[in-house]
Length: 91
Ligand SMILES: [Zn+2]
Image 1: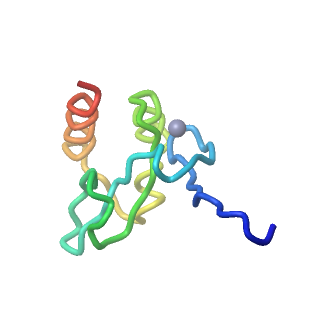
Image 2: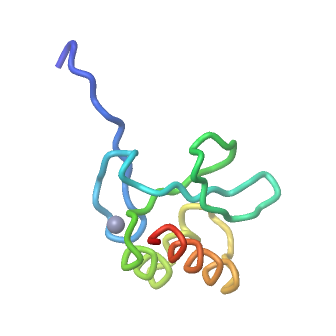
């Protein structure tokens, strides 16, 4: 509709739901092929989005959502790191 400002929506790689961008966590692949949680939302690189819910992270791991988003193999240690970062965010 004209004049309606829409908040951009992104799909969670865990549960697959479309949500407002600001409700999701951005996971970033840096040019150095590192996978990180981008809390600033401003870093360059390819991003995937996920709910602020560890369940979704676990689902994404199970369904290889990150592999599909970034088209690369994701090491288990990266998942462990993400899980840790999720725990930090929940505090
Ligand atoms: Zn989700």
